[in-house]
Length: 157
Image 1 (cartoon, one colour):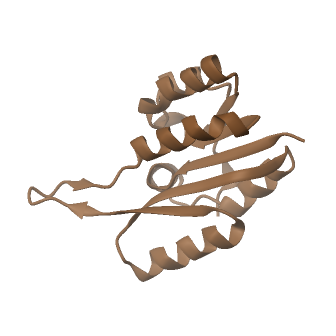
Image 2 (image 1 turned 180 degrees about the vertical axis):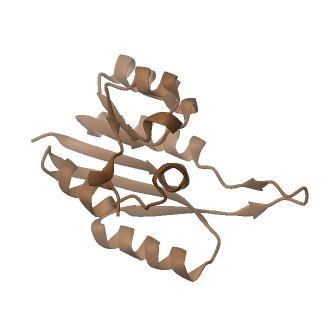
């Protein structure tokens, strides 16, 4: 049975599904699909912490499904811009986790991850499949993935 790792860029998935479908992503449905493909040994959801009650409920639901939820403080800058991305954290965790996994799944549309995926595939021989909203997923990320899965109705609430 394949050992599977799931790595979720929560903010990216939230905004791309909201912008495209005006709906939320169904993490429970994803878990069911991927658990049929192998043993999920690593599942991490990377999110920003705004100390909001609805976010706390969402994070508790992710934990209940089986995800480790990693939080980074949401920072609102004086100029109105915001910061809270997990690109470096996701990269480190995926590079370190590849040695113990047979297949990895990244949920994101961020093209910054294309080099990461190529490195894991080429240097460690671990396939990396990507889930994303096609119109909002960088072409370079889709091309770099071992397989690209379009987020569609079956994965929405």
